[in-house]
Length: 156
Image (cartoon, rainbow, N blue to C red; front, side):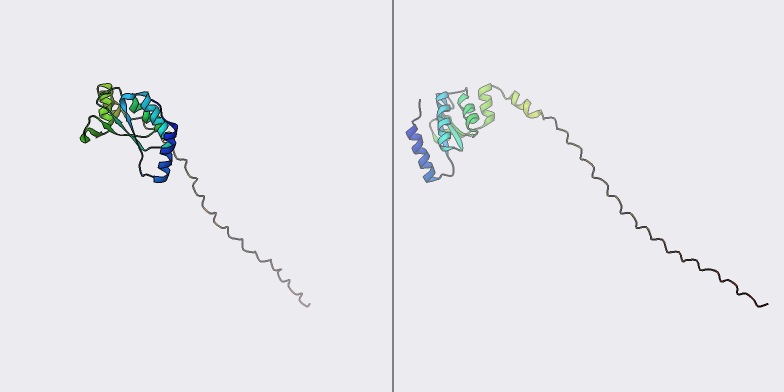
């Protein structure tokens, strides 16, 4: 399955003119790599917000879903599991993992394992404020010694 460059350019122009709030890629989960290539091409031109995969009830492998999420970094929003409206169900990663891997035991184990906390660096102590030095009182000026009066000579 190939994508038409002209159609992709037209979709890009329509997107610019309409300016939609949300853009969704809808792909066939049975088409495998073709769906992934379509999603990649569509994402390059339109930058969609999420995906809907049809025929999810017929494909338990899930390769298209994993690849689309990896390539576009957008979520799978819904999965079609039948032909009626109620058969379009919200994507549930727990159900997806159980369908692909057959058991959720591994998922529950990884949920219960908590990562080791990384030690926080010890804060560097702030330098203690040094007290303002008390002003030293200026020495009082010492009075100049006054000369002792010399006794007056007594007349003889």
